[in-house]
Length: 342
Image (tube, rainbow, N blue to C red; front, side, top):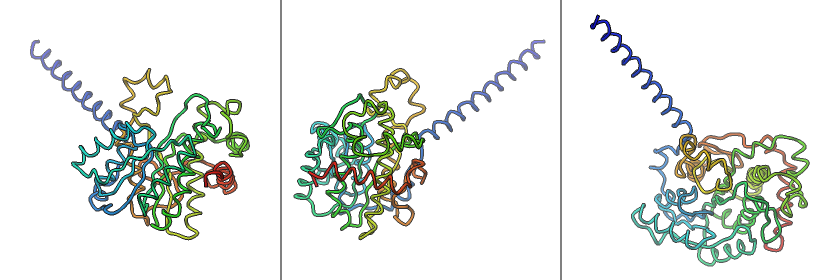
């Protein structure tokens, strides 16, 4: 009898161990999935950015921009950290030097407030006074689902920060990007795909001037305005690719970093409530930077200018992304809003 009971207990223990092992395996594979794609190690090893000059906007510590700067700097590039806060920029520079073991002379902190077009123009003037080349521009900075507000030029705050500030920055540096046959990487988001209705494209996502001036509180929710700004990133990337192809081999790409544990979600109460379990379903800033880095260094022959990438793979960003009229409307409205600074 004792022998029988022992056999049953042993069998149960074995079965429980097997179930536990299987469960841990599923959890491991799930976490690996949520961590997303990575830049191939062979590509990183084969890449040298010696002599290259790169601008990354939004390079505060613990963010996607910071991790992007750190990796590109480790590959030999001179990296300009475009930041709104001098203190954050200095902290990022210090940390990158520590982690990369030197290279202070290849890290430059420059101030820029994307909510003020005058500040963007001043940044480009300062940059051109210090540098003669620009190989890669990574428009990384952004805000997400914040309260209704406007920029200093009375542009809806999310559209103004996530798109228009970067639009002006890119155009003012376009000659240098073309000269180097460089690249522009615009951070978009999966959120862009949430704009699905024709009525939205004819309404608050028509990108006519009257829809993006003022705080847009009567047109859409803060969430929808974020989706719109990320859609604008994709449309701008498409239209920019056409512009670059006219007289250069320069290229542009849009990318989705994934759900990343950064301060970007600070306006979302749900992020606070579910913080204890969010780690499993989200990426670290380093993991979120992978697609930005990939589109910045991969052989152009393996990429498609104007297209959208996520987890280092080409994907569809929005169902309206190939609408030429919509691309051109966004471009023209952006030109009109920036005319005093061009």
